[in-house]
Image (cartoon, rainbow, N blue to C red; front, side, top):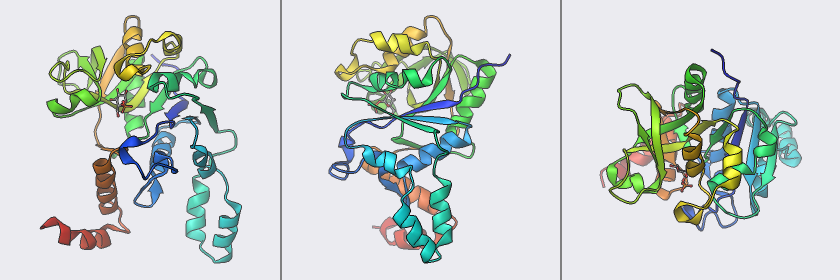
Length: 292
Ligand code: G1P
């Protein structure tokens, strides 16, 4: 059976980044650097690798720099050209979108992730789409979203990437209930956003990559606020689960929560150590701190 192809992705970028203030007072958290590229650069690269052809950014006030990041910076480009820094220039140009490949829609009030995703409804239209939460930088041999799309191509419906966390951390996330099996791809039986400590249905959390059917939109439009007083994507997914299949995929890779101080630090260290051009220098610079 073939399912309608996933061509579009929603990337919600309206959040305040309160966990990494004051660094995010004037700079969108999605543009904080991990090694030498903004977080968002990793997210867009992952989506491109997975075959995404159109990116819908759900932005908010103070997020204009994101739109600028994905545009020409003529003075800088001319300067790099004049100085013969062609490798760097090529790197900048390679990341620019084709014209018309990105849309920006404004979430005018911070009403929650579900509300943010719903702001993209008219641009997504009537087709399945991906959601990538940009806090979560995923480092995987096969990009995380590609793993989700491969699963979708097998079973259709809706796919949620999940990962295991210690039981005392489940209250910070959306948590899924799944049918018992050793298979990394399991049918979901339930989901709850930010369960109270000790009540989570499993220790598998929703880790920030989704493939969703457009039928989520009418549900989001009517969604009442849930956990934290916000319109939660999780709550509308629970409603959609009554009529459509949801599968949770334990993906193969490492996640760094870059909306968090320690996660951001870990991402910088781990990804610098994996870079062939920086590995040795990074190791030498960091090793004195390991034995303290
Ligand atoms: C959001 C989702 C949650 C998910 C988490 C992953 O929560 O609502 O289900 O587990 O992202 O980071 P937030 O981090 O916005 O509170």
